[in-house]
Image (tube, rainbow, N blue to C red; front, top):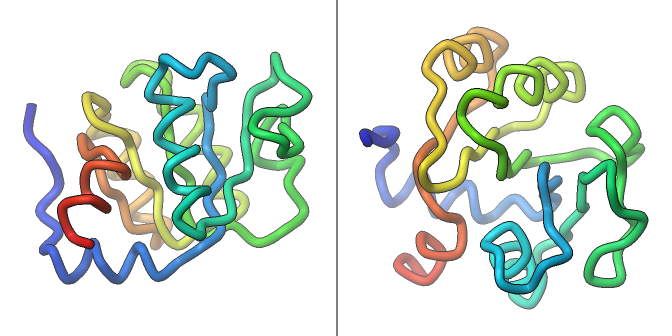
Length: 136
């Protein structure tokens, strides 16, 4: 699967942003949707879980959707299957994050095009944990 064409410097700049809403965050410590945001939390990022089936994950209030979050979001980190990305992108556009990051294995060209048209940068098919470890 292809991935976006961001340079390492562009990815490093994205990591200077600290407020990350994690859509599809999991309570299950064996899932990437749990241990990736946990790693980011341990490395100084403000993680905001988004999962309608949970009240709290990693001691942080969990939101049903992006629109319920009152604080400003820099990055929307998405752990949803590629075919379920469009509604997440449409919701994200309404809160205007700087970046939508689709985790490793996630790529939806149609949804990405809509985000880019709305002025939101899109990273796809990359893991935030792996890229952070590689670059820092």
